[in-house]
Image (tube, rainbow, N blue to C red; front, side, top):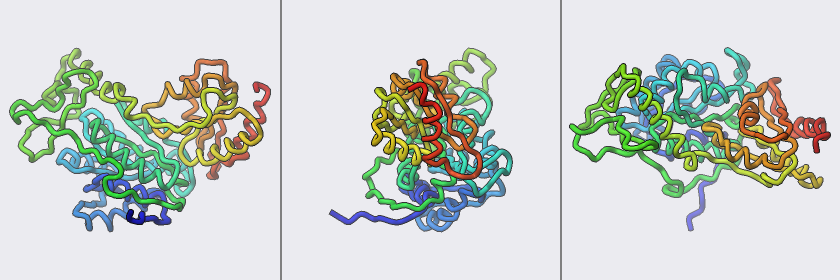
Length: 382
């Protein structure tokens, strides 16, 4: 058996390597802290592998280029941080409506506005879901380590290609810049999915024909012999605009169903002693690392503690959260913002459990001691 390739590398570089593993062949972006290392790395590596790298004039143009490249058949990606992510929202909405597969890496930093460019934050959780207007499907995955920066980026491309949708890799400054051991998988070890192509004659192809709810229509590349129309207006099965309200509603419901009918293929969580715990910690991203330390500490003290790690933030894993919190008396949600994911936890949990946040926006990571302090402050419910 061949010896595996192992490197000591930062999360942003692992993310770039994961994109290359998944078949990335087009990148358009604009430098922004703390994601710039992704563009820097790909500017060197992508052309060596026959791909195209282009630095655009801003994030709006970057997202437009990514959409165009994807419709031309490329596996396309961009990377940014909070302010740039805000600028991309209109084009992300366009990609959602038109079913254009692409990956957007958002290495979160402090905000609002320019905020604190070099500090850690988890400030874009809600923006990832609701940043663009209108009802729209979206998938957002969340790595907690350098290794997961690689694997979750591969998964993001697979989900984008399989479900014809933009997928967000919601990283953060800590995960993006920390350096850890990274074990490279062999080619073929992780499945790489490519978009489904049509098999019907070109003259019969309809880009948005859904045979049944939950279907994902095939998508050819422009130039492959299939002509089809793409617009940001509401459309019918042919892709051309329509003013028919019934058709508009049906098409939007089908667009949502291609995600929500396949949650078992999209949702990803990891759990430790959930469902029968008195204290449940729900965490994501770099903050999970402190949460895992707290779980190990409290476990040794004999406290019935559970830990739920959320790796697919959107769609939110409602049923997993409900099941994990079934017997919990205290639910703790640490996050580097003033309370975003906790809103979804509160929506899902239908018990009498007390739900509290551990929140910080002081440019420092949330420490294990902060989480333990919050648990002790609420020990009256245990």
